[in-house]
Amino acid sequence: MATLHYLPPVKPSAIAMGTIFNHAASLAVLAPVFGDTYNRAQAANSKEEFFKSKEAASAAAAWGTSIVGSAVQSYGVGALINATGTLSYKGAAYLGSLIFMASSAPGVISQVFTERRPMDTVAVGALARVFETVGLSLFLTWWGTRTNPFD
Image (cartoon, rainbow, N blue to C red; front, side, top):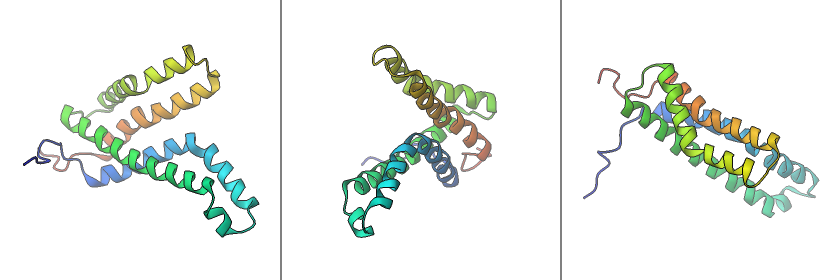
């Protein structure tokens, strides 16, 4: 029987606070989606008509997946902080930078050189990803991720 024994423990409050932090950073990217949805809701004749629309369903799906993704990412970064024994902000910045380089840098490079997207669009997305990786690791180091700090 498989157990969860191999997954490092992370303080639940760190996961919750990291989820809030990470979700706030990702909302900076999703704000235009929610802004358009809000304007359509105001233009709809009734609330019932809006809630039955595709825009409401897609906004709810984007928000829900963003929350779940933020929680999973918060646990992952907290587990890496614990597993590597990171205690300093310098170490947390290095760890967050490595996470950024492994997860987001290839997409940024692809957007610049292959897709030739506008630099302002790429820069906003990259800045949000830096907050979600480096900022999250610094925040979780400040908050504390260990369930028992004396271990």
